[in-house]
Length: 313
Image (tube, rainbow, N blue to C red; front, side):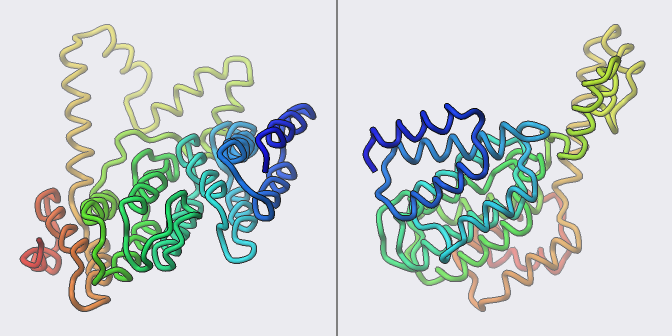
């Protein structure tokens, strides 16, 4: 598609007002049947962001039904067919406050397909030997794995961790990129012992906040929601007017408490990770790195997991 045609498409779409699903669906169809270039990729990423992230209620939150619709549109015919479509997923992962977990998992599964088939053009890379995780694959995974799933920036969810295990098992004997084991260990380790240190309210809470802000006097409700689970407003006022050192100490204690709580691998998590580690017999390099990560970073874990630490890299 010529650059001039893309500029005309942009002019037409935005000249008619805010873009909508029909515009995005049309662009997906065009990208599947005509040549693509960087300008087209930028356009379709912008339209997807406007339709699914900015022009939503509340802004920044991708609705579950929108995520399901996009997955359906991109899955038609077997999945992603060009890098512009993967660019949509990267744009949404980096620009949204909250990404439904099924969209992140879909993106990782499409990268898994690229790894197994060797067809990297759909993720923006160069075709490579099938069944091997390349440095470009790790970069593609990094761009989507740490999306703000369920409002938690830099936090990996279980479905994504399971998809990463599948990639590790499928490439167990391959000469994978040297950065893959570390990325795998940090990502799955994040799921197991990562603390949600910065959390946005979920979509329902954010919609309630937006509704309250639209009403006279609704600003107080906004702060009440933001402070859910924290001291009430009167306590906050006393802290602000009191000793700053005491305030800092309280924040540090709260932070330390959250870090400590997150750093323990519980029985359910241990059962889950052991089941995945034992699927393919011999541990992969990535799995051994994960065990080393847990041995060094987890405060505690059930004995059935800690006894596996001896197999760490």
